[in-house]
Length: 481
Ligand code: F0G
Image 1 (cartoon, rainbow, N blue to C red):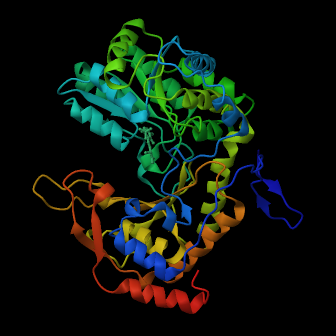
Image 2: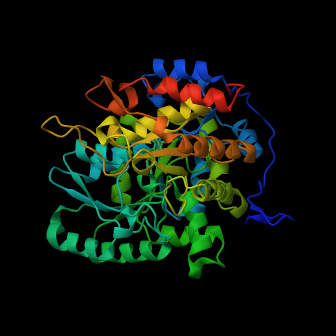
Image 3: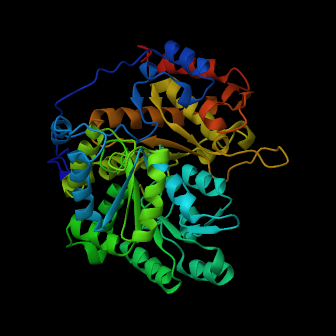
């Protein structure tokens, strides 16, 4: 669905669904929020969800399901082996991805684990548009490494480029010249997560696939964020304007060899899996599934999850359904942009991204600009975003901080979950925070775990800036909400 024009000239995205089940939310007053974030060590991962008003941490496993998904769950054929739920999911996947074999797995990273195990050997290099954290970890665990070769525009946070997720074709050709025998596959990620949900074009997929064919290596496609990417291809790529979503999806499928996905995102359910045609690869994967995931006809998913995913995948072929996420995100980003808040543009899928390096220029990078901004935003609004910056990096081998070139706060917009007034609330509070940005200070480590520090690490303010921020908020919002 495209935006609808109101009589007053305003254009807004209009929800093509109605709400049938709701969950009560609470907006706790600012004093309680301050206490909660202090107890969480200024790490939004450590907040209790009961203290959060709008949870914009991720879109993973928190998209709203449709009534048809819910009802399909009652049809689950619960059993250990050979259940109908598996075959129903397999059929839906064959319709969209056109692959003969389906290997189920409990979620996206499990697919990455299985694929890395069978493809990646010590010294291998995997070219890709950009990594996702779990992808990189699994490839490295097998002794391989990643080679990120997106187009240069990908690193321009404010760009006009409509497909910032594209791979640079020349760089891929050079990679094959330089590392010919070390490349077991090329990986393309739809709706490139760590670049701010930026899409790839169908044309780029076709070009990359033909280079892979020339070099005789498979093209592995991470379809976790395909839903938003399909919307962008349909609305931004001239040659696809008149194609149906299913047609676009089928074309993507015929230009990729292996497709894997997290059903926590694609299909608005839980689970994941790998779709492919090559029988030998399928046989190798099949050996690993019972070891790491579960029997071949559930792979760690419950039958209910498989039913919900099957319907979710079918519903993803509906343009109205896939429009909602990107349109809501664009609305939020446009409003923030108009108000002068530094955001990543053009708006992508998954969520909106605040540019903390520009937002908090006065905070030193070693004092965690994105983490400080995420903490401040929670304090003044109850909105939980995610730090995507230095805290998410690992230290350099010599022990020094690895200061990230990009400091973002991700505000995920789970699909069909938030209302327009909630989105307006987000915009309002971010704009207020931007006007009062000088009150925000930095953070320093209090407890720093050795691995995955962004999940469990705790930080503390370098000065008493949080109290000052709270006082100013109470002056402007006397109800403390
Ligand atoms: N690939 C992409 C592009 C992802 O965004 C994710 C997860 C995965 C793979 C792994 O899938 O979580 O089912 O194991 N992204 C989540 C996020 C965690 O918050 O962005 P998973």
